[in-house]
Image (cartoon, rainbow, N blue to C red; front, side, top):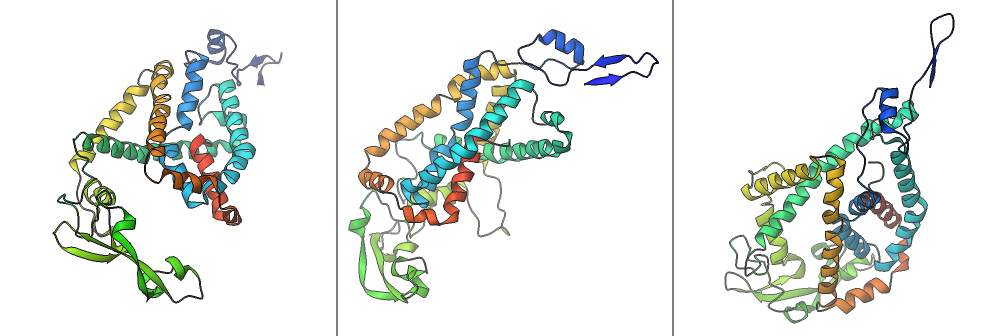
Length: 342
């Protein structure tokens, strides 16, 4: 940027606006009057930080859930298309500009001041994202703490928080404990999304009922939708201690308060010494998720019924591609995984 002087001789001053990371940092600081931003210790540090940012909880639980909900392998079609035409180009654009200018999200829009509001919006979004995502991490720490027992607390229905509708699927599989009724029941009682009720021409349908001995030692036979499982009840009644509604806020759960504090402390020590320290931390945070994913994969393919899950995944339901929500979910997952715009 060249500013004209006010003198008669028209003195000109050269001001540094776009910083070149390949140049001399000391010279640039002297010329621009701005402090030199700390840089990564090496290319591998930067690459691992990018990889670690893209692989997280969203890949462990959100992506499989979206695949299951949106037609199995058919979900990969809009996912890959969105990745090629939106995800990768925007990711490369953000990384290129960020590496060239070495400026944060608020200062990056000096190249086009009219869009600086986008930078403020992105900073606010990142703030809210960190606040709610740290809560998710605290849940993970709580589950890790709860699993340090000889018997997992979410494996049985004989805990104080379990209800009388809880059925332990590990004692007797579904096909042995539950059976299809001979008579039909009105869809108004079963729900419009249940079996034959999905067909608008049907007003009734057969239903599955499960017979089991509950935690009160009573033999009950319940409609399958009214049966709960120990995993879900541990999450809702023990971990979250959910109340009847928003009008019943409840109190603070001591264990979650502690795990939330631990999560914030870990987050602080990951960044407290700047980029060079973070570059060393990512050697663990970027590679450890792949280690966990490998363990989960081996565990998953050895479970009963794994072949049915793989068959559902490898035999996609392409009719789901006509639903716009499938494409929206694919685009959302790409932006969620790559952190585009943040």
